[in-house]
Image 1: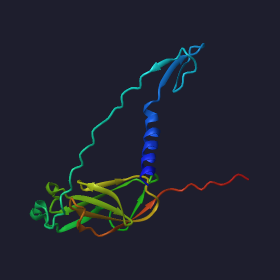
Image 2: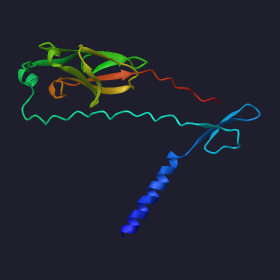
Image 3: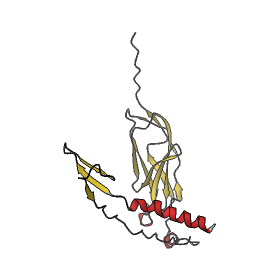
Image 4: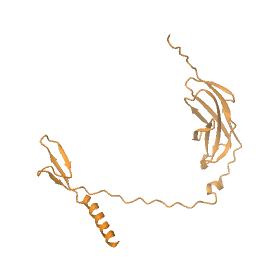
Amino acid sequence: MTKFKLLSALLCILFNSSNALAQMYKWVDKEGNISYSDQPPYKGAEKLDAPALTTMPATAIPKKSPAKAEPEEDDKKEVTKYTELKITSPQDDATIRDNSGNFSIAFSVKPALDSKFEHYFSVSMNGKVVKNKLTSGSASFSNIDRGTHKISVSVKNKSGKTLLRSKSVTVHLHRQVVIRRQPR
């Protein structure tokens, strides 16, 4: 068994060292074309030295801090309790006519949004978040499909926890449809 291991190790070293012994050659043919190869095509080929390999030291990966059981300092200080969040425009059950599918909404919160603690607005349409991390009381939409849509707004903290959610507002978006008749 020892002879087998020794023979295997020698064969591995031999095969791996063949790459280190490889040569590079450069030559110019009769038509002026420059070629490179690991074997010279004739005696006039120029032997090249391989460029040194570029190496970079490994980047140190920062250690993860253990999960905190207690809330962060900012969460302890978080005292803003929102009492009201509502969509002020458009009104519930409103009809919007826009052929390009564009419209805006406006909303308000009491007390004012506390951006010091990185609170933000998140707008959902038909149960899916469509606008996120807003800090102003409005949002614009473009190229929305025609039909009925339910829109709601939430106030969230920096970790994404919902602090307050508005009532949903239903809007009906009408886009003109051109019926094209087929030629006879």
